[in-house]
Length: 109
Image (cartoon, rainbow, N blue to C red):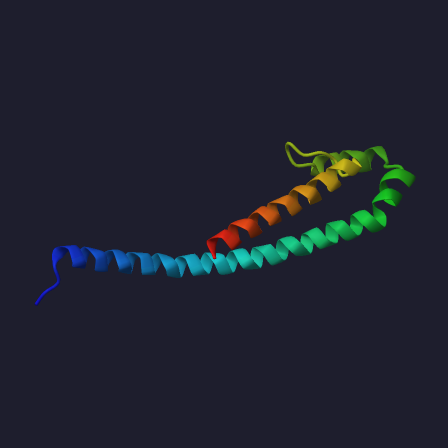
């Protein structure tokens, strides 16, 4: 006896979903690697911020050339790291985003 058209349609759908799942696994593995890279940047920023920010930003003076070079590094819609709030706000926003990701992952389990 051959499969009904309805069951065959389901079988084809299962195959398509299975194929997509393989791609989903690859994307999750890439995302996991990205998260690890992101965390390394966070740790480095926190370390630089806690160890060196005050000394560099408050006790030293930028030359006009250094100031221009630093300003050229500021991404659109961002602020200079010379403002203490910039780093603090970004680290807090990153923490909030990580918590939201964790909540989403827990809900998916």
